[in-house]
Length: 306
Image (cartoon, rainbow, N blue to C red; front, side, top):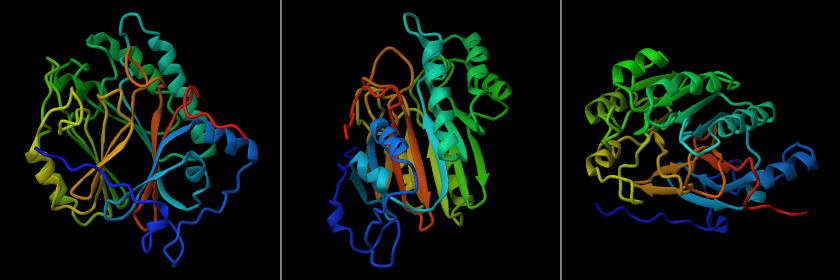
């Protein structure tokens, strides 16, 4: 399958769709926050994008993301690949860092929910218990998807988390579809497309649908798989605002297919990947465009000085 490369227009080309204002211009009035907190925010942000209604993606500098002022209708965090229990890694520290910084972020920017998008543990079934103890400390409701290193049966997963591997969540006019892309053996799989199609059809009148799967379904990187039927399944549903992946620890960007953005969130654990461990934030605006960015809590890259 040939996947089109994303197109990133400059901010100056934006004419009619925007985060605020009737003139179609981006409102870059500085939000009401202290200079100290704004500087701290900018130092920790990377991979920022503005995704417009219709799928157009605009790259943002950290300072632009910090200055983009709009009243959000929904805000959530996506994090993946904690790999709790992986040998020769400080996995407890990785989980502590995630919990601390998501909690700090929530205290300043209220979150509606959190998704942990796969590879919560590293292979061994018994690791789910200590990993869940960490995740239960998150400041708001969280949902999970099953990754290729979460090597338990679908039945055990559902019993342990209290939610099946293919799971629908309704949040007013928003729907979350969380689907598995692996099995007990760690095989790379397509999500259940019959289930996905049925849920997309049932939610076609919802304002917004967000899809969460661990393994990407296009060959964007070595560990992805190629499932053209997945993209064809999504294509008729214009209310699918975005699809979120884990798995590829080196990926933290946004790609578009059929005007739908497909997003990565790097990793918050594990032995390989980007030089930082972070999490993705999504801020949905009332006219259904959204801003999204990676928070890099360890401040190892993209530091800014003032």
